[in-house]
Amino acid sequence: MKGSVFMIQAYSQNLAVVQGSTVPFSNTALKTGCVVTQSLDKGTFYLNRPGIYMVQFNGYGSSTAAGSVGAQLAVDGQNSPMALSQATATAGSVVPIEFSTLVTVGAVCRCTGGKKLTVNYAGTDGTLTLANIIITKLR
Image 1 (tube, one colour):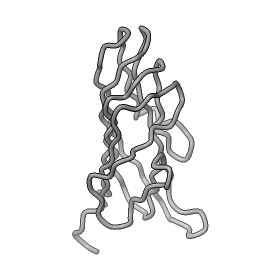
Image 2: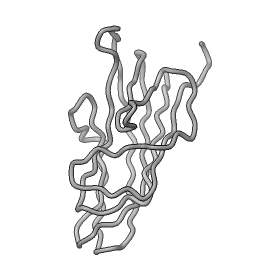
Image 3: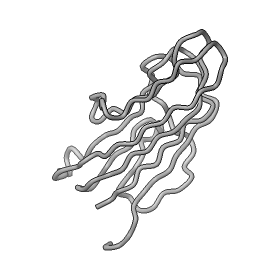
Image 4: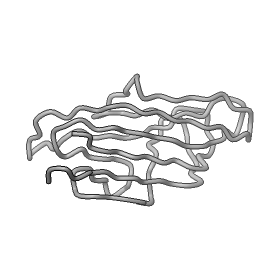
């Protein structure tokens, strides 16, 4: 529908995470339409229509040992170099992480669907106190 805003906001709290694990977003705060959908395991988002999408992620986390807390967006299984956030952390200290990027979806085939997005943990084993994502179709 012309002029409509299609988006989803989802989040999780107090997640135990390890390097390379997919971050699940268990709670849906807002969802309009079916242009952006989420897998049953809550770890994958699907961009189901051609266009340009804004992906915004923010979170807070801590590591169990001195190291880093981080997150990276993967598009169709490939890490997006423009959507990576890492922060140095001492054991137990809570640090913020965030990124935003644009993702373009070309023609969509019914048999393969659109783009698949995941957020993967990119830090020392620890806890994400909050992981929040907003995906908005811009045009």
